[in-house]
Amino acid sequence: MASVTTSSEETKKTTGAAGVVGLAVMCSRILGLVREMAFAALFGAGKNLDAFLMAFRLPNLLRDLFAEGALSTAFITTFSKKIATEGDESAWRLGNKMATLTVVFMSSVTLLGMVFTPQLMRIMATGFSPEKMEITILLARIMWPFILLVSLAALVMGMLNAKHIFGAPAMASSYFNLGSILSGIALGWWIDPHFGPRALIGLSIGTLVGGLWQLTAQFPCLWRVGFRFKPDFQWKDEGVRTVLMLMGPAVVAASAVQVNVLVNSSFASTLGDGPVSWLSIAFRLMQLPLGVFGVAIGTVTLPLVSKSAAVGNMEEFRSILARGMRMAFLLTVPSAVGLVILAEPIISVLYQRGLFTAVMARETAGALQFYAIGLVAYSALKVLTPAFYAINKKTTPMMVSFLAIGTNLLMNWIFTLHLGWGHRGLAFSTSLVASINLIILYLLMKKQVKGLETARLFLTLGKISISAVLLGLVCWGGNRVGLGNWATMHFMPKLVLLILTISLASLLFFGSAFWLGVEEVHDVVRMARRKLRV
Image (cartoon, rainbow, N blue to C red; front, side, top):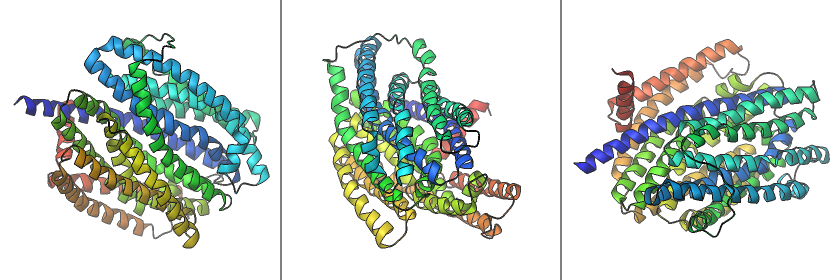
C-alpha cells in the first residue's frame, strides 16, 4: 500500500510540476518565436540574418554543450543526491565551489573564443563570402560573453530544480528573449535606423543584455531557498570531482551532437544566401513543442529519478522514467503530425511580412517538415538521456553519440549532395540521427534496469497513433481548404483558418485519446479538476 501511495504522489508531483514548467517554457518559446519573427521581418532570411545566426552559433552551441547540457545534467544529479544523503548545507557548499569554478573556466573560454573567432568561423562557414565573413566575425566576438552568463544561469536553475522549484527558473529564459528583443531592436535602430548590416551589432549586444537578465531574474528565488554565494576555490572536493567526472562523458556525448550541428552549418553555408536562416527558423519552430513538452518533462523527471537512484529504489526509478517517456510521446506525436502537414501555413502566418518573402516561407516550411519527423525522438531523448547519469552509466550516451557523427556525415552526403535535397536533406538527416539514438538508448536502458514498462509504452503509443491519424485528417482538410495558396492569401483569412484547424484537430486528438483510455490524459484531466475544484 505504501508503494502505491508513493507512486501516486510521484505521479501527481511529476504531472503538476511538468505543467508549471511547460507553461513557463511555452512563454519563453513564444517570446523566442517573436524574437525570430521580428529579426526575420527586419532583415529577411538572407545574407544579413545568415551572418547573425552563424555568429551566434558558437556561443549557443557551447550553451547546449556545457551550460544547459553537460553542466546542468551533471550538477543537478550530484546536487540532488547531496540534498538526499547529506542535507542542504553540504549541497550549498558544492554550489559555491561549482559557481566559482564556472566563473573562472567560462571567462577563460570567452577570452579564447574572442581571440580565435576568425579561425573558428572560417571552419564553420566555409561558403561565406569575405564581406559576409567579416561581419560574422565581428558579431561573434561581441556575443562570446553570453556563454559565461548562461552557464551561471544554468547552475542557478539546477539548484532551484533540485529544491523542487521549477516555475521561476523555467521563466528565466523568457527574460533572455524579452531583453534581447527590446534592447536588440532599440540598439539596432540607434546604430542604423534603416536596419542594414551595422544594425546587427545592436542585436548582438541585446543578446548579452538578455543573458544577464536571465541570470539575475533567478536570484530572488535562490536567496529565499537559503543559498548565499561565497567564492570558494577549494575544488579538490568529492562533489566537484563527481560533477566533473559526470560532465566529461556528457561533454563528449553532447559534443557529437554539436559536431553534427557544425557539419550541418558548414554544408548550409555552401548552399548560398538563405539556407542557414531557413534551417535556423525551422528548428526554432520545431523547438517550440520540444521545449514546452520534452524539456519540461525532462526537467522535472531528472531530479526525481536521481533521488530514486540515490536511495536504491529502482522500481520507482523505472516507473518515473517510463511515465516521463509516455507523457513525451503523448504531447509530441500530435505536434509532429501537425507540423508536417501544416508547415507552409504556419510559416506563412508567422513570418511572411517585411523582407521575409513567400519564397523564403516556402523554403523554410520544407525544412520544418523534415525537422518535425524527429520531434518525437528529440523529446524522448530529453527524458531518457539524463537518466543514464542518474544510474552512473555516464559513458553509455557518449559511446552512442559517436555513432551519430558518422551517420550524420553519411546522410548529409546522401540527401544533400547525392540526391540534391539541399537544406531539406540536412534537416532530414538530423531527424533520422535523433531517431536512431533514441532506439539504441532505449534498448540499453531497458537492459540496464531490467525492464521499462515496454508493453505499456507500446500500448499507449498505439492509442496515441490512432488519435494522431484523426488529427492528421483534420489538418489535411484545413490545408486543402487553403488549396495550397497560403503564400498569396491575406493575413486574417490565413490566421483564422489556421487557428480553427489546429483547435479542431487538438480537440479531436485529446478527446479521442481520453476515450481510448490513455492514462496520462486522464491524469491531466483529474489534476485540472482538482485545481478548478470541479
